[in-house]
Length: 313
Image (tube, rainbow, N blue to C red; front, side, top):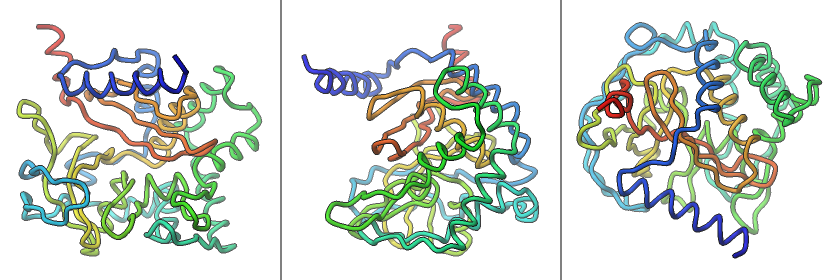
């Protein structure tokens, strides 16, 4: 059996096991380092203090490409966010300056100005100053995946997250890992792809470009306002995302560090790992685009340590 065929069977088995209610084993080593990063994430926002969310109703099934959707959330997801705190934390403020640097539609060539390059540099420098990314760097050096030279590690991060590539065939360089994961894109005007960041979600919702439709979860696993990962449904500029997911309240450096580690510790085109971080059990999905990131997102499996109690029973 070819390696590619084997990977195909493996991915199919993972998806089918998810449908059957059983899950692949928790990756304990990854869980350990990611919990270290979690504890070091001093810039993480605190639910109920720095922001307030209202999860409201369970979203209904919507097929991909359909623009007809019932709204199970009459209110926004974010009822309050401490914007002054966001603006006063360098990684958040420099992250927010990058969000308007991209063309929303795939197939439209990205034009990068010198000012935008400077903003990217500033953001990466700020991220590299944090304890979260320093610890991630240490781990990756120990694992032989990154150079101990900070300049080379910064180049590596730049290649993974900011290198432009073709997402749509027969077009110019129209996408990057950062744009896809943190900003979001639309495809053919009928589909939202990527868009897995809570700050972008909040800002787009505040500006009335985005409408939250409700959460996605199984019957016995209802989310609450303290959850740091949510599966959700929304529309953006009138286009529907049937099911999306994002960390909530976490810092940009935490999310970048998590997905960079998963990206570099695996060589398959598509990687799905199960980890326990704080009180949540989640899948982390990472898909490569050559030596850059195609997409990356968390998918909540259970929260409030419910997976721990289930195991105990």
